[in-house]
Length: 147
Ligand code: 4NP
Image (cartoon, rainbow, N blue to C red; front, side):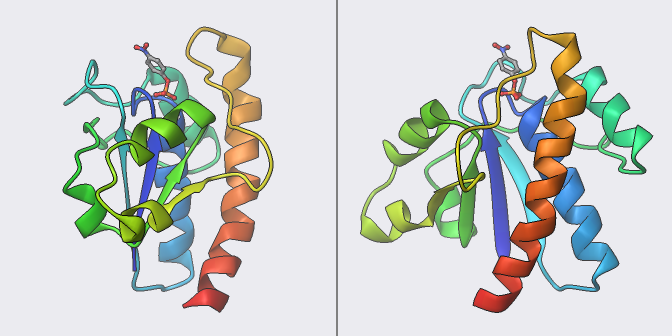
């Protein structure tokens, strides 16, 4: 199974979701892949934001080797599930869908609400990490029972 995590810049939130879920997939010995991308292209090729790298490292997750990518329409063919962090990501990704099958792949990462963008608020990296990690713990079980 191939999973894609999407946010705006692909340097703060989706790299955390990518790194945390990859860590859990590895720990559980699952044969799944997870990657990430951003709906914006400003940071393409860059490493994640140092504040995301730092909070992840604190919890034993290394995201430093990730590089930002721009979401492309072809990604609908490459992934089974596309999880987005907020409503704008949701409408931006859906606007690129070619058909119902593409649309069906796009899901909000959280069951309720959004993952807030921490980019302009230093204090939000820790709570955003916790929010994403808690959701990944549940998501991995949901995906295992669906697949
Ligand atoms: P992200 O955060 O979508 O969680 O990666 C952002 C990073 C950069 C920008 C916006 C959001 N930016 O405007 O450059």
